[in-house]
Length: 483
Image (tube, rainbow, N blue to C red; front, side, top):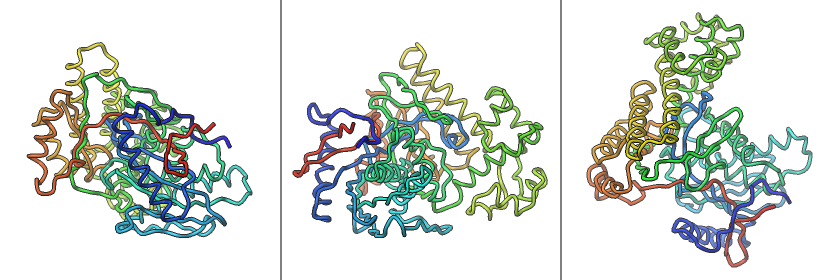
């Protein structure tokens, strides 16, 4: 069969330390799968976590972002089942319950204020492929999978563990059902599929999961999805640290509220600017395109049209000339319909200013300036980004702010929260000579020494995107050449 993953070089000789470490993880997963199911897996798929260097909360507004893939990953061993069975296990069976159903009877059950079960993220991937097969007119019997999941991405830390699991599910179910997709199509499908969990993300996490390249960050644009390598300053080192504050964005309404505030901002500005199709405008990025102005001009337009004060639902109804029922059904998600006030100016300003910072970040990376000058400029942009996320987007957390400050005190050029926020991780920029000193300073001044673990803060370098491994009967695995 012609698979959905592009050919990749084998992992046999000249392994890096990361590859050797992952080989150990693969063998453990292989042996556990064989013990659980009394047969070897057909494949093992590895999907990396990600850290976003700059461009936070703007992908769902149709602006570009600059992430890179991490060594930390979600890995799934799987094999095709008879009769469409779905058997989903986690290698950490003490923490994560298993799930059994079929491709015809499974369901994703969402409750407001309740975190989804871990396996429901895998089910999102199953449903994504199921819906695609229906759209393509495939009338054949959908094949199920037995899977065993393991992971090294800390959950609810803003490093995309949930998205990585959805992506892994999409790959696994696509492979057993002979669904042919490019990496870009896999990314787009995975982004749509994750919305079954209730969050209205924009596609960055899934794009970097499939399109990442080793050794470089990526500039990812949407609609259409495309990516370009970013050449970072040679001396740049990125450090990722956990704030120890966790947040499940699917459990609460804050994330979706920000998405809705951005959409309402776009629609109100479009109406105030008398665009004939204002009712169709959903995204701040599309609004800029329709108005044909620069980002700097959009910032000024936002300041002049939207007010600092919170907008009540009644005010929004009056401006858009809609009833409360229409506002709820056409503009709000189920878990944001109880929200009574919205901050529109602040959210839109963050989006336009952050999009401008992304453009500046790319310009600095491409410039001929001395490396140290580049690092200082990039660090300053990261600091400005965090300040905006803290004050305009209000998605930071006191633990994140403290960790950012600790990194700056340790000599980082810049630091910012990464991911959705309200907890999770910080990414800091430093250089090679200061990296170890920064790690030691933060370990000593931010973390409790009695509970410190090395994976709480670590240096990272860009890793490749999703990979598929084929294993022989002895558990010796290599990256599959699948064409």
